[in-house]
Image (cartoon, rainbow over all chains, first blue to last red; front, side, top):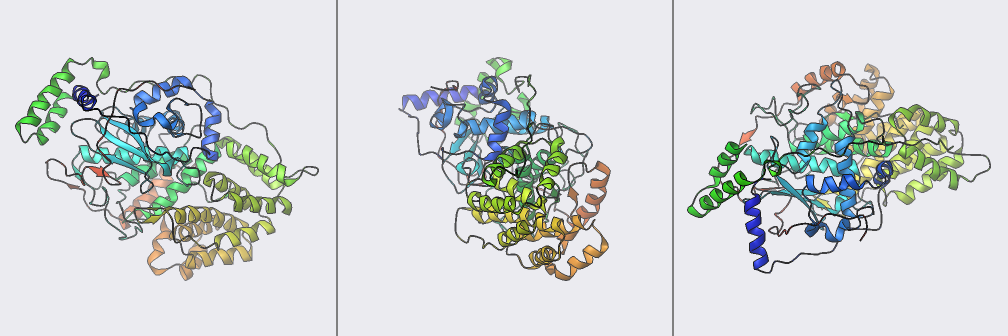
Length: 286
Length: 298
């Protein structure tokens, strides 16, 4: 990873200053959403996967200790819910050249920790704040930080499902892409202040519409510096959610696909200044 | 990769100390094993293909109370695979005349809507697919539930409001699919008068889809849609099976009507705390120590 040496110095410095593990309150740990349960039922609890996931997403016992780190098969808890979403990103997409917006290679590189064409290295932690879904924080020196809030874990919240949680990985990861490329996406937490145009909230993006096949799989990071070839965080999130809804692997459960479509559609209507974005999923009830 | 790192770091090198730290970091990076430097590691292979829902259970059964059949059916339908879509539809159709099942679904929707959003979506989908008259009444009542005006605020959005509106969007899908006089009347009311844009937008989408995107349907919508929301009628629809040509053709036209301005670069300089954060206030400075691997159980 980038700056491993510096991080080592930082850790040593913190230790010498008596830096302690910050254990705070936690999210609702007594329930799990239907979509999380249904996806979970497909892998049971896959030890090899979560032992890979915690390294590839750069999660630490320091941040997740009281959130299921030592109870990784208990899907009521935050760490298991996080790696459940990573399971969806890693294996859940069809990568259909004729119908998918982007491919697994794009979404994996965007979500996972290592430095890539998409962004600098990141690490993930969790926060009890409910004023956000997630956040991206640039650090220099050191890896950038993606924080996931209880709104992605508490089953009563619409976004507490594997598709929306993974969608947030994409959204926050794209803030990393914007930062890496020195792009100014606005002053409201990396978005435009709102409501404005067709956007109804405070935190608006533009939708830089592109068709299917405009980006080869693996080329999502590319831009020509114009509106013809560019993405915003909410756009990447909508495209990912549409791919989960409409181009999933044959085993992705209905509850995950429907949650993805519902999230994509509310986001497309609420968050784009030049919107609304297109719709995903079928309007037929089933 | 090293060149990119050097260039990025030089943007921030404004004094001696950062430069010295930069040099140290480069020495550290260059002496690290290559495998540890930002390389994606392959995930474990998905050796045992995951199996979706297999055992079909009826939504209603003559000798079993609906309080038992309905939740079991929802469990099964929620886990169903994309290739089981028609099977689920047939199972729902087989019980479509069973008003007891529709009423039980309605009761469970009311019970679950504030506890599990994804399960409630599934139940509303099943209820809408039933095309049952009692189910239709339930869906009408549901879309008229008042949106919460207080709750958890994220980016100026009350997320409980968005949550209910999203569920109401699924309910209008069911009303549009019913294609009855009463349901269509409620649908057109939702297009013009529902408090949430999420619901108004989905009502338009569902009305068009259920009328084969006909000119007559567009004309009917144009009579009731809010003047500043006429764009909702023209939205491209991406759904399972939509081909690249079908989608791209519509999108090109739509994108021309909805242009985005050119993206802007910021000056190359050290980011302020506000600029260095996306979606929220900067958390406290990270304090991380070396990790231990996670365990199944302590």
